[in-house]
Image (cartoon, rainbow, N blue to C red; front, top):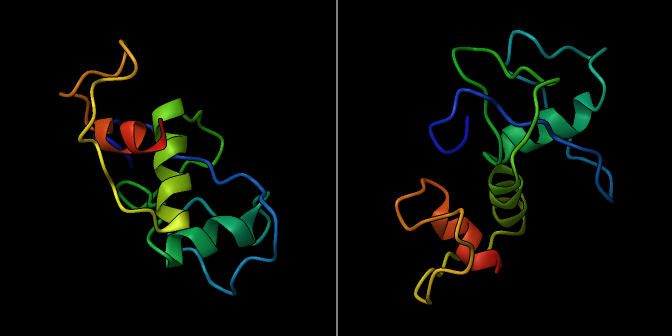
Amino acid sequence: MLGGKSEPVVARRGPGAPLAATSSSNDVSTRTPNYSYISSLEAQNVVQGQNGNFRPSDALTRAELTKIVLLAAKKQLDSSGAQTFPDVPPTHSLYSYVETAA
């Protein structure tokens, strides 16, 4: 779960081979599309499910995707500048991630 929202994130296929890992989510099996990517990102603490479920078919917000990209890239957060996007105020739970990527 990202940003206090109830929707978990969906790992999408990216470049390179994923690390060998297993998913800890009840609803992610080896038959789940992109299983190896989801389990690899879970193992790296980039994504996580909620209440034991990942819900891999759920939608992903722009802010959630931004957080995934920055965590995967191991970027240090920096939101010291002015607010860039009017729809992501400083009170938004993912504000630091969005501003770092801006």
